[in-house]
Every structure is written in C-alpha cells, then in structure tokens.
Image (cartoon, rainbow, N blue to C red; front, side, top):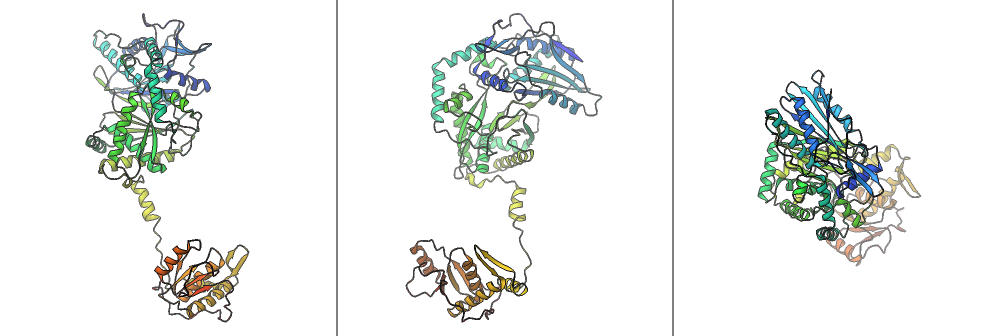
Length: 613
C-alpha cells in the first residue's frame, strides 16, 4: 500500500524565484547534467527498527519532518542565470511513502533489499523533483525497515542523521501523546546566504592560498588501481567487519600515541597504499562535514566537502609518527575545510579524469545514530554514499557489538570484485597486526600480504625440492649428447651447435684448462660476454672439475683487477686479450684464435663427484 506525504508547511516556503546553488551543490548538479540518466548521485540508507511500529503514526511523523526540512523540498532547474533551486510544490498529488508488508515472502529482508536496490538504480529528475523517496517495510511481526533515498545535491551524510533523529523524535512524541518539540532545522535561505558570505570573505582567500601553497608541486596521487577513470553509474561494494577485540585494541593503540581511532584507521590506509604501490608519499581524500557555525549544523542539506591529506609513509618512520602526521594534517585541513575540493583542483589545473588530486577516500563515521522510536531501538545500514571516482573506504562504528564495519566502494571501471576483496582482506589483516604491534618500530616491518599469501610465496612457491640422481651438473648434458648427438643444443644469432659439437668443443677446452691446473676444488675466472663461447666456456670449466667466477667484461679495469686478486683463480678465460688487466702472473686463455685441435673431443678423465663445487 502507499501512504501520501504533503510537503507544505506555513512559514517554511522558499520564495517562488528560488535560490542559487551553494558551492557544494554546484559540482553535483553539473555532474548530473552531464549524464541525466545516471543514478550515481543517489544516496541511500535504511534503518532497521527492532520492534513494533505504527505505520500511520510513522507516516505522520515523516510528513512533519519533510515539511520542516525546506532544504529537502526543492527541485533544481537551469535558468539563464544558472541553476536555481525552486520550491517543490506538490499540487494535488502529495509525495509518496511506499509501504509494504513482506512477512509472507520467503526472505522478507532479501525482498526488501531487492526493492531498495532497484529503487536506488532509478535516477532523479532534478527539474521535476521530488529529490527524495521513502519506504517502510514490515519484515517481521516486530521488525521494520525504513528506507530513504535522496539525491546528493540536496543531502549529505550528516543531513541524513539530522532527518533520522528528528523523525524518531517526532514519532516518539506522537506515540506517547506528548507535544512535538519545535522545528530544530535551520533554513536553506540561511545556508545559501552563509555560503555566499564565505566566498566573498577574506577567509575564503586565505583558505585558497593555503591549499594552493600546500599542493603547488601537484604531487602524484597514487591509487590501488594504478590508473584513473571517469565515475561509473554504479559502484561495487564489499562489506566486512573488524572484530570487537581488534577494534578495542586499535582504540587502545590510538590512546597510546595520543590520537583517536579514526586517526589510526586513516594512518593504516596510508601505510597500506604506500606498501601496495611502492610510493612513500600518498594523498588520501577525507570527506569532511564542512559545517562551520550554527547555520550549517542545523540544516539537513548538502555541505560535505572532500579535502586532500598528504602523508609520507616511508619504511624508516614508525607508525606512531605516521599517525602523528595524520593528527596534524587533519587539524590543518579543518582550519580550511570550507574551501571546495573542486576549487582546489581547478586552481591547480588538475582537470579531467587523468589528473586526480587524491587517491582513495577514507570516510570514517565514528558515531551511531543512537535512535529509538518510542523506545524501540534502530540500527542504521548505509546503501550508497554517492558517486565513487576510484575507491572509497567507509568505516562505521555502529556500537552494535560487532566492531567496525568497513564498506569498500569501488569504481567498476577500475576494479574487479576479486581485486577489491583482496585489498579489503589485506587491509583488515594489516589492522589486526597493527593493533598488536609496537607502534614505534619502523613501518618497513609491516608487510601487507596476509598469512595465506605469505605461505603461498615462502612455502608453496619455494617447494622446489626434487629427488636428483647421483650425478654432476655436466652429467645430464653428456648423457643427452650420447642419446641425441645430432639434436640442436645451442643457438646464438647465426651460430647453431648440435649436442655432439658442443660436447666435443667443451671437452677439448676442458682438457686445455686442466693442463693449466683447473681441477676439482679450483676456480677459473670467466670474462666472456653473452655468446655461444660463454656457454662453451662455462661447460668446459665444469667438465674440467672446477668452479667458475663470472667477470663482467664491462667492469672498470681496477674493479676486475681487485676481483682477480681477491679470488685468486688458477686462470682466466676471455674472448680477447684486452678484456682483463694482467701482470703476467695469471695464465690467460684467449678464445679468439685458440687452437684446440691437438686435444681429443672425448670426455676428460676427472675424479668428479656431486660434492665438488
């Protein structure tokens, strides 16, 4: 069934000519205008009410709250003077509240959420309005779900909390027969006037100068995807929980380093981003309320801003030092939080999808609504916080005994479900380890691989033990030469040798090296560039029973002389006589022009065992 809301109330009308948009609204309006059919600007949540609800009283309460919130009751049209928000007049058709009893469904909660997600996928018509929708679902004899969807251009997360608190307050008063308290909301006209006054003030200019100086070098904003993309119409979401025990440990950790637990969460995300990308400097995006003064604090509208937080998360610093950076960085950002994210990007010339100002957004909400409807408690469940450019990490403390809820919202143009899940699992694992670690040790000790991933790399990837026959390294090569003498053994540019040719050449050179003292337990230096002769020489040294010391022919002469003096090989093999320095003391075998014909091509005799070098 459907109940109807009449969204008019005396003394709360916006003038017929409407109002200009605030700076916070303007960017969202343009984004919607570029893609009118996109639902990306929709925000939504539902409250799970754990007890009986009178739907008629609930409708009356919501009716009054909608009437009080004039910032909600607007539509936005394009005019010759730019976009303006006009008063929403319902005329003969009041605004709908969808009511449904789903108790007969096999999965009432699932059916309700399916309806919500379908509704969330519907774009608003900004010019027509209304820019909000409500639904009340009965999913049990004493359980209800209150859903609300609002376009981001008229509402932010703090505005949701104002609406929810007031609805619970009015419902409780109506249910108890008590007088409803006075309208607590500020007016949209005051919010617009306050925004205009700020943008004409010296404070605005000081804030602009602060951000322009702080990011004058336009640092690279690394992200986990390794690339950028335009926001999509939808986003991926993965929800996980950090258990209560680890949550409490993180709060204790925060206290020990003179910070709050949101500071610790932000520092941990900076550390994760640094380790995952290899960048010591990272820039996170921090959604901030942007509500300075009594006007914005009382208006359920769109004020929220995103500000960049620039951090150095190198391996030598400690996590305590990184957390202190966060504390000081947020403190500085709050002093200039009204200057818009869009304006910072414009001032710095960071336009287009390929010039991001920030990497992931970290949206920490360290509060619960704490609502009750006539004594019946309610739990909030977020469904969408709006468009996602790259990745948004939403962290909620719902005080429900489950610890922290972490929603990873990602742009599907940049992430697959699997990749998103891996990042979330690694971050939760990092949080668990940080919670139990000494915050004063270097951050380089904190990897981001999970225990399973470390086991995969260190144990499974390295499980290379094989049963080997009791032979030497040259044994299988000589055996192959006996089995397939005419098969190709080596190819280098225009040179091709069969196994028989390679084996015979190596045997002759091995006999020559043996005559110079190369035998088991001795060392022969090899200064031959990459070539067929290099393979031949290494094999000949092994056939003679020796071990080889590779020398890079491009090393400086004094470096090569030092290595030869330090290693003291019995000889050095090179392709030409000007490769290595010499004092005449060390025999030098020059392959260029070397005549090996006097030596037989058969395997040289040697007392060689697998135990020799």
